[in-house]
Amino acid sequence: MIEIEKGSGNVYADLGLADADEMHVKAQLAGKISEIIKARRWTQQRAADALGISQPKLSQLMRGQFRGVSEAKMLELLARLGRNVQIVVGPPRRSARPGRVEVVFAA
Image 1 (cartoon, helix red, strand yellow):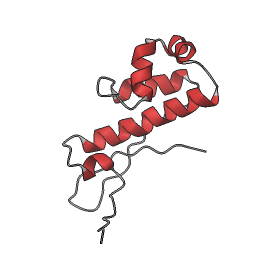
Image 2: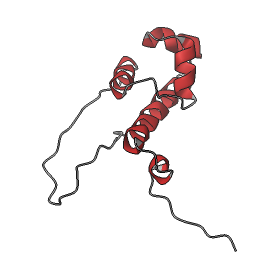
Image 3: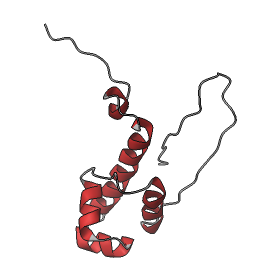
């Protein structure tokens, strides 16, 4: 019998990576960037020109290889793609646990 374990929703945390939360946020941002580019039917070169980055760097980002790209840079790329980006800092949590960082995409 195969035992199945439910994931946490963050594959990086499930793999035990130290920077799991950061990697999860970056993966979501990279996925949205890729989604927008594909929906516009842009070539990677067209998108790279519009975003002000090299085509090889964009190709890596779209393939999930984003370790060399900061979250701030990804937010800038989303803004260049015409998206409004808001950073909201909420009230403190009532528990002793640290707060969390999450990405929420508006409809």
